[in-house]
Length: 85
Image (cartoon, rainbow, N blue to C red; front, side, top):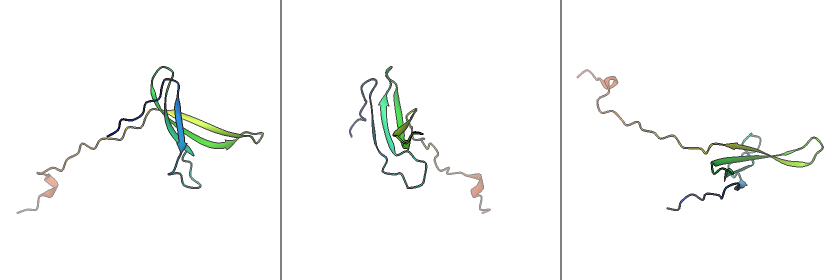
C-alpha cells in the first residue's frame, strides 16, 4: 500500500474533478496541499469569469476530509427482536 503524497510547505496540486456532473455546484478541480506552516489542506476550484469577462478559478481551502468510522456492531440480544417464544 502506498502512502499518501505530502506536498512541501506552501505547495499543492489541483486535478480535474472526474465526478462533477453538468449543472451541479461541485468543484471543477479538487486537490490537496500544505500551508506555509505545514498544515495539510484540501483544495477545491471552480471555473468562472470576472466582471470584465476574464477567466478565473475561485479556490476554497478546507480541513482534509476524514471518512467517518462506523463502530456499530450488530447486537446479539436486541430487545426489539423479542418474538414471544
